Length: 243
Image 1 (cartoon, rainbow, N blue to C red):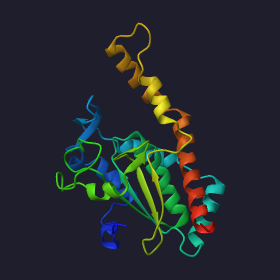
Image 2 (image 1 turned 90 degrees about the vertical axis):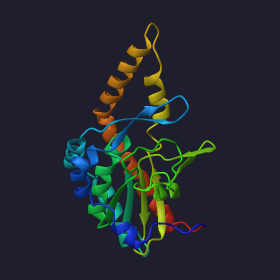
Image 3 (image 1 turned 60 degrees about the horizontal axis):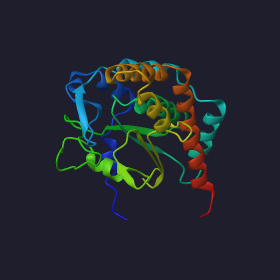
Image 4 (image 1 turned 180 degrees about the vertical axis):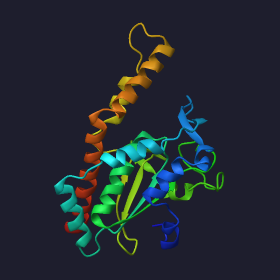
């Protein structure tokens, strides 16, 4: 197994949740490119970045763990070699990050875990599905390479990434992009499909409206909570099941 690039020193360079939210609204962050969809060849489109700091603050303010989730993370953190640190790779333009990062901050607080958040990209957005750290050395593409999303025989640099470690940086679990209960490919595929009689522009505008409405609906909170449940269950298995 290749040596991890996550060292105590590297982890310490990440941002706390408060620092990350402040950074999201900063001139430095807003000067960076954001993601605007894929070209037909799989490359990414770059667009101007919006200030999403208010969305993170609002979601954090109303994010609540259930009593069971709070008890579970406290129990897990108290076990020998239990979770003690969470490394997150995020970009604020990502709906998956806006959904889950505030809940991960609440989880870290409840369990007394140290949370550090890293950008994926530098000034330029990742233009391919697999990052090349030498092409954009101002990003964290070496981190991203270690935690690529691998499914259906392919791999790519999905966001969000949340990696759970013991206090001495033994990896326990990695959570990538969204919980299994959120069937995103199915839902987004339906939203993006043209309806009978729609022009390409009408289909694109309707898709944007439906996707935004979904993000503002109770279901984003349902899936955020489901992500926490999925993480807690995986950590329990890791600590209690002999393989």
